[in-house]
Length: 344
Image (tube, rainbow, N blue to C red):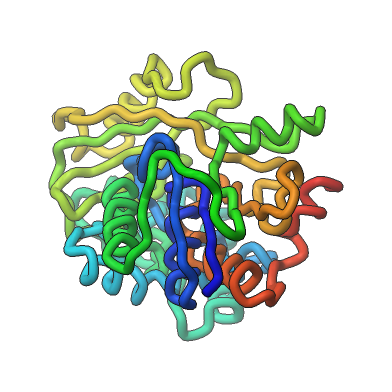
């Protein structure tokens, strides 16, 4: 039996541990802060695809992971007894002008070519009452987008792992093959060790409103995600900040984002903000996931990055890493390889 230690209990680490356990490996997960303590404990939970044009490896990898999520999360929740909040309810985006309409029409064709029967990207003129008007009276609708409660999803996955005999520890010695999935902290340490900027934490701030739209699709408007959740709340986010003092502290930038959300979506105008969140999300220099041999720790592996799309990519990342570490099969896409990241 292969023994594996996963360092990091965010969505990458927990997903990799699950994929390895399902292949018969004996796995332990170690994180000094516990599951979902970092960026994976966020509040927005928008599992949204890239636009279906200029197709590339990253977009296809994400598409396949998003499709796999439809079976994955109900299975995990059934085993754990914890609701991850997953639901594939789609997303709406207002079309502001004729240029954007032409672009949206081109993307309809792109979705047919690159999504096939897996999902649709369409132009619609009927939306729920709470969605603000579109200048053209039309919206982009896709039904690949899903929502998830990031923190509860990590708790569900951690409980499922424990039910299969995989301990989640705050400290312990490495055992067997080691996979580092330690997020922004590991990226910063690697950059420091190698003496050049290969990645860092990029701060995001988000908020949760007391607005129950739980059966509604998401809204993406003016670079802002509006995500209704299963618990009767609605999350908005997020900022993107490269320069900051405290990654966990909310400030005026979140106040401004809340004001923007209230102005864009009248349904939020009089709703109370019930949670404010901030955290540092791992952004590798390439903005793509990084997988393969760890560049600092000999004989160890790394799975990191996936900036802003970590939950959407995690299932695919986990399967590829389990292929490599458990079965010795290398299916890592060239654009995601450690050597590409280091040399790029």
